Image (cartoon, rainbow, N blue to C red; front, top):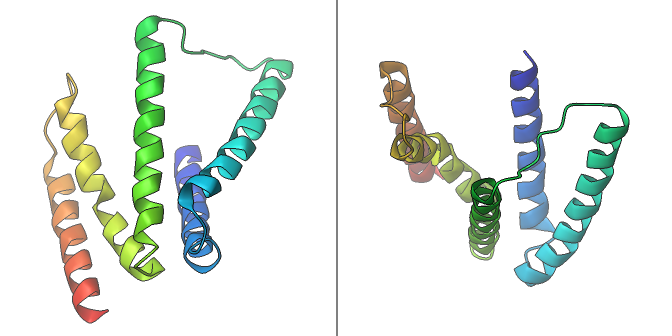
Length: 143
């Protein structure tokens, strides 16, 4: 149940973030927005890491060179994914950007298949991809 609650919470917050990006941050340089955002994220991350340590929670931090490299790769991908999304808001609306975000699971599955042991999508996932494609198609046609 916890993963579902966290996922829904993340979706709600991403939805809020998309509206803020469209309505309030559209006119600003996206890299300036990132500087402020990442300073805030770094501060919150350090505080929450410290709170986790005080509470005695188990912490597994990236330690090997491979783990560090994957963390850096994640950060680079995260940065450019956000750059593309914010750049989309320069010429698009929340509706256009968020409806295209329906395709994220399709791409996530494709990338997961590229990793060793990723496997192929099952029938339920394939049906979900078809519905995601139809949702994008009809929403763009109707919007």
